[in-house]
Image (tube, rainbow over all chains, first blue to last red; front, side, top):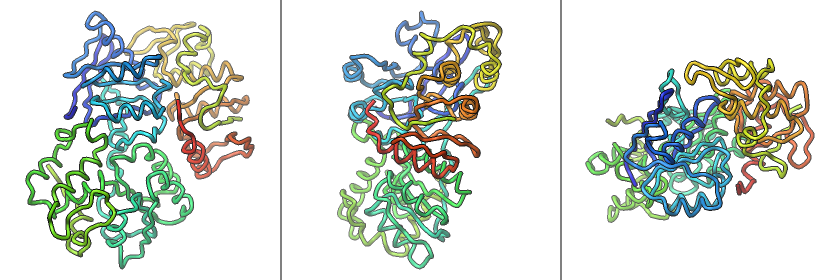
Length: 321
Length: 153
């Protein structure tokens, strides 16, 4: 399944209108915003249809996956649908559930405050309900938290989630500045490094495509460390390269970047990060010094010359339509 | 004192909504503390035992309160049980601290709840007893215990 999915749910009292732009949406936030109400309405429509008194408009089937002995069978039998899971459903935090959804062709809306580190999801997927009288919609919680310009590296320390090509790039890009680059060897190591360096001015560089489970802790750290921390969170390092002026002449790539959701088949690419890696690998095949390795072990020298470093590091600043 | 256990506890009531629906008392909502949290969190007014009103739904019973308010009412009225406060949003945090001023409560937490600037509570994993009031120490312990947890529902 791919593409944006619009959903409208309403009854006599309240309406919810929202669009899903990725395969996983985490619905969280304050109590009393209507999350459980939304679930009950979808549940009733799914069981009783129009006779429930709920109107639900969506091109795909919408179901609420409830806790029962048979949830795995039910999920196996569900295809091309939007699956909602209510908070406190015990299987939601299990590795079995994570494994199953990674190979499915459904979209998911998971209501929870738990971080779910076993599921790679984007910080853009984390939503809360915004109420406006009787009309409610979804809004992103972590919108615009990334700085766009880091070219001067005005930091004492850059913590880079990646340990391979991304780390090699940012280390080279910050040469000649006062910024020391260290790798956290994955997203789960970032908080530990922050704790050890809490008095420094820090830049955290990570892929927003899979940082969803960590972002709450990182934002909490930033809030409590009196804003001495900045985030640089491109979708992924490969996305940043594709967005840079190195590829501005490729109409196909620019078209994909304008609306990735229309191209990314969720069953094949659970995280957009995987898709952009594939796109960069395929787009650079046979190109001298730019052929991007699938295993991301060594960044080709073509990305490390001054001109291309400049193009990549400034790619977040480029305004796309 | 608020005593927080990070992760799953053998005596935890994880699904507080289900527990509430089978165990709530109709008079709970008429207590002044209950009226206050229902007004603030759910933007609703208590009319009578088990009867609440707001501008959107009109009259409804307390089974239709938010999961956060139900969890707070359970903690307030059954302080000897261990409830999952990850069913509560950050807008419930100050009320958890308020309840804990009057009595000892033990809760389970599965995420990093934001308790604001001023807080003090104990993290009781591994029989810890120290009172925590430093946000960085709280973050560090949350990271230690929640990320070390297998999270196998």
